[in-house]
Length: 274
Image (cartoon, rainbow, N blue to C red; front, side):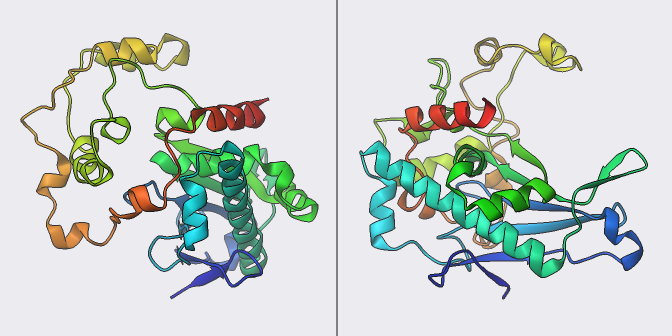
């Protein structure tokens, strides 16, 4: 089982690696590190690394004191928690680049090649924002290292809290429903997030000009709040034994960031895009 050290205390990340390409294309090899969300976790010269963060399969669990930090009402404690997670990811990236001799980001025949990209899915976007927003907390030599290798950072389908944005009144999300207990949220979330909803904005979404896209409010106004009966939620059609692999329901609330700390994420957004 491949494990990567992420500090000098014996903490590890579990990861899987698609492996290197042949030597002929090595100088152009791009490496993509994929980080999961909060619940589900060679021909084109692309190497893919799947990374499990703390408290997920194979990686070092959080200690009780770290779990207490996640759910603290003190924003400074939460900020320091995210700084530590950013430094763990930075440590992993530097370790992996050196171990696997990842080629530096460079330009060949007018194309950017080599280097390493990071892509986070769903709520995992908070770790991309943390890595960039807390870059000044990463040791100088490692920051300089990233200057030579970091190709891009992709936030794929992040929820609004990752940017510190409030949920719109027309947008229902069980994870922020005060009427639900944590166990109820964990039970309802998979069905809600894989459900289909009828919408009437296809023509606007077909545009290739981002300035013609609907605003979030306009988009949500045209999305039915009730789930479509046909097809039902995707998760309802997946056998339980298959779901047990990629999902870790208990981590959704035991060891995931506090969705209520929107001011913290808003500050990180400003630090990232300033």
